[in-house]
Image (cartoon, rainbow, N blue to C red; front, side, top):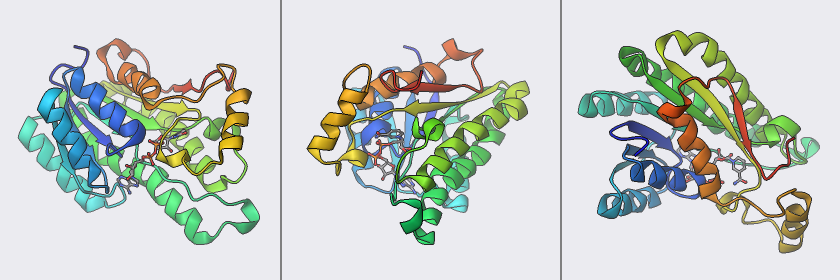
Length: 245
Ligand code: NAD
């Protein structure tokens, strides 16, 4: 088991990539704390507890600083440590630059960027105490390349990469690594509204000729969260079928 007895927080673990991460981490021996606003998070935790390992679900928004701080404090009290933070929660509110409302800009910045900042800031004291930590955050290949209709989203994903590099410099001396993952097109609820014809043309444009499944991305998180990645910090691992090359 690659994460035996590690305490891992997974934000956005109720569905999609986060659910795959939560299940994989539990299989690998971690105690998984799922944070999500969707109550399906409870079902994910129940499933894990019934046959994979150990998990808890908490209905908290990553944007709620005081609730996140309280939760992390209680996790540390209960398990004595927090080893891994997976900043996976994210949203989209797509529109071209000219049509994007300030509300859509703020909403995406709040969850994808400020939420990552809030969770990372809240976890660091516990990781410092144990001189051990793995912070892995969801970027996107859009954060490297931009994307039509995603001014707000692309800005947050580029920001996540830059924050991870910054934390690498600030936190390395405490045994804490900080990395980002940049998934490409992955089959989850987030992309469900894309018309079938468009989906097919997207797939054809990918060197590996298919969309990712959530588990393809979860394996990248597993590596960066594991002891095997002890000497890896400040990278952005692209998992996008060969688009970014
Ligand atoms: P998803 O919409 O299926 O899942 C996101 C989860 O985050 C949901 O369960 C949602 O309830 C939760 N969430 C949203 N706001 C939250 C908040 N304020 N507090 C707590 N939880 C919240 O999306 P996904 O496709 O699984 O994406 C996961 C991450 O990967 C996101 O950060 C996304 O930007 C990134 N990503 C996805 C793709 C893709 O193609 N699906 C590509 C690149 C990057």
